[in-house]
Image (cartoon, rainbow, N blue to C red):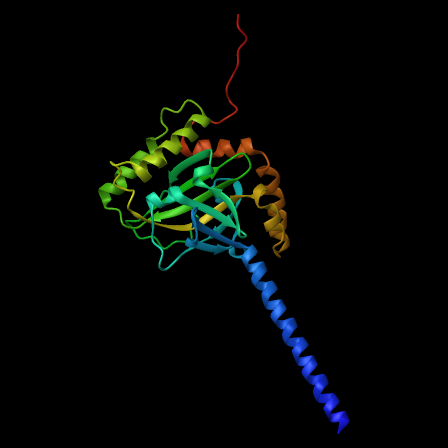
Length: 266
């Protein structure tokens, strides 16, 4: 009888220990998943998330910026949260539970729209009347490119916005000037009384990150040898910020940085 009691007690202790281990593993998995979460959120409210994605579902791509490898994370819009253009000004990107970059803190801003025949990894089922745009945010150490969609533009609104995007930095005399004009143009779209776009609904469908700023995150992923080789090659190129900025300059049609010539005075 005493032996049966001892066996029953041992089983209870074993089952309790097993449950503790299982619960602990669940908690650890949830912590890891949280660490790899990408969110677009309001800067003043941590409870409002407009779009969310997981770093583990991303992949390397050079189609966002041609021939420059980035890490693209597809995003899903929150069902009950609608994002409008004027909400962009209060948006921050959060990676692994920490703020990565916000529009208000970005010193470099550029916009361009994606041609219908571009081979773009946008992850969206846009309709014929939808407009796909990209917004680059950057500072000295980080750059991210948001891909978002307008679904409710009339044909005339779509054509007008395309024209404005193509021409907002036509008279920029340098890359830095183009970035400043990008800030002004975005501010105009978001807040100007004359803007017909500030209340238009947008969907953020993906975010591409500069590799050098998410190196540790990528290295924590378990991927095949081809991925590892491609990542190492593109990472070395990405560490050259001037090369990246030159490709952005080409995308928006301005003179690339680092090409100014200096002449000695005669």
